[in-house]
Image (cartoon, rainbow, N blue to C red):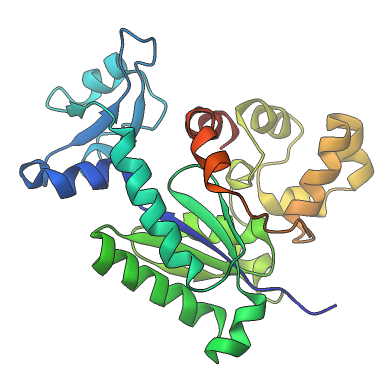
Length: 261
């Protein structure tokens, strides 16, 4: 079976970066985009690196974030603006493949296996070009992962930020992926991470080396998925989504990622 080449592109601190692009005076200050307390969404949706330095996290309550950083500037979300940037970002990605699968507004998988021959370059070349175009055409940076499956491509885009490309291959994934904490694996939420830790499983490598039957005994069918993901055997396709489905999923995906990741 021919190895696939999949890219995962992620706009860095998307909402906060877009707000600072439109409001240059915010640059250099700790900034977060926060939901409305009145609408019971009083949490941090995005933050810049200055805010991150104070320990402010996505999904954190606004009052808790202000306690860590009294000078934190919180701006309300502007989803119309974010949707416009999301469309522009996908337009860049569609120049490299028709197979683009969004994961929320700010990240997408791109199947470029069939594009390599057209461009005459490898996946890293395409990833680097996507980063440069995102920076110069949209004014924000992106981190990109390149791998032979969706799970490791996503993991690669998370490894180096901002504005970086990470390549994870069938030859190096044990050195790159396995030492990482178990919670870095897509699908390992807080509850799963706690249960894994109690079982003595602390890294992705621990999951990969664990007998799949034991994982299934502890987690049911999901245990088999964890084994497949950790060992780089995910074969799920990059699905194509229509514009209507992408927009409809925005509200759910924003909060779903907080519980999954």
